[in-house]
Length: 133
Image (cartoon, rainbow, N blue to C red; front, top):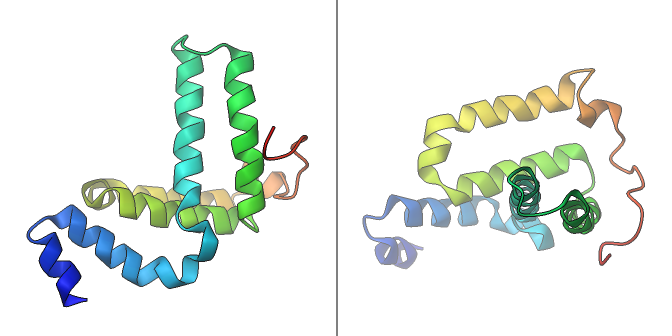
């Protein structure tokens, strides 16, 4: 392990990536940090629509396959959220230091507030089609 840290040198982001990979890698299995990737993808599609780069139909045609794939990769809203937070932490040590607590608080809020979509919408809600569509 020391060899990895020596390769990272004084780069805090590289050291962070090693720390996260060592701490969570073995428990993530095939999902890795896919929740972060899927969520960023959906966010970019949404922004593309709002900024006029994609039509609403184009945005949904890109978002829904990702949503179905995300649903198939995780077992629950909680599983998705935990994986998202790990991916976010891997993505940026600086952003995690700056506002990681806010994202963790949002995660717990989404899991517990009775009006949250994570509480009111079952994880297993049929999203139509297949992950490839």
